[in-house]
Image (cartoon, rainbow, N blue to C red):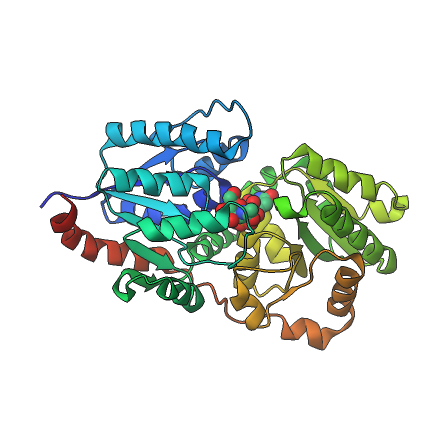
Length: 391
Ligand SMILES: CC(=O)N[C@@H]1[C@@H](OP(=O)(O)OP(=O)(O)OC[C@H]2O[C@@H](n3ccc(=O)[nH]c3=O)[C@H](O)[C@@H]2O)O[C@H](CO)[C@@H](O)[C@@H]1O
């Protein structure tokens, strides 16, 4: 019986991080895994492929005529179609909820090839995040294997009528990636330091022992005033607590940086100096910061998951989340983007040790670091059955 050829269709930072453990698990077992990078993220993607040692077999260079989603979708349909014809895979792997994942699933369907959806079943049941929520639903209709990270995600799929035999509660591969990266940092801290931006290196020297808040905010729904509110809240907190510093890796979108800087420049110099705004960070630097920080204020999905693996409390700068498990387990609080509310929640974490301890989880609800192994075990068994159905 011929070996399956897998094709992962990925294009953004979280997809690369969350696909890496599966890529290496398949390789370790001697399976053939090919990669098409759709080009949805450009600059930050290349460094990640290097870090995870997973060179794409096809690198799509997107010629963006506009920022229109329809244009992105049509460009990706053409590009992934070409990749399918060239690489002739048997199984398509997609991750999450991006346009790349949605297009990869649709093309696979057109070619009659089965789709394995990694991180299946996340839902807000709202219009937001746009267009990710609908991408998730569409991929859910097209996928053959649904690798859900939690019971709640599995239940979402069951409620949409997906057959239980196709849903596998395997945990989230982001925990595999985060624990693997922590190990790599512990074995070679020099590599991590070399990869850090100069201003962050200096900041670490200037503030080695202060309590540290890791801040990130990039979601479209938070652009503009909400991000300014987050910056204002951080400024207020640091004005009240001289032993607290913040590191804020800023999303590549220039409008986001302008808004943050507009707020931070209003602060007195001694407070402003305790906030390190950096460019978007390499993965191991980000993980090292998560290991070092006291807690994180973030609207990122991946960072919520990773923080839970390191027992770090999370304040979520959103009003709803598709990762409610962490809130239910007590590891995170939805604090929105109102200045006073954020300040009150940060103060509580800084001043009330019992509250802080209650938000430190021993165990992540998102996985134990063995998700890729489970996924590949399942694919290895089921792909044999699938050959009958699809070939
Ligand atoms: C609209 C929206 O909300 N979309 C979501 C968003 O996913 P997210 O919220 O998880 O995305 P981010 O926060 O960008 O990435 C997280 C990963 O990046 C690492 N990281 C972060 C900062 C840094 O400086 N260096 C890093 O290495 C970090 O540790 C983590 O693993 O975008 C995806 C498509 O882009 C969507 O599919 C997903 O719905």
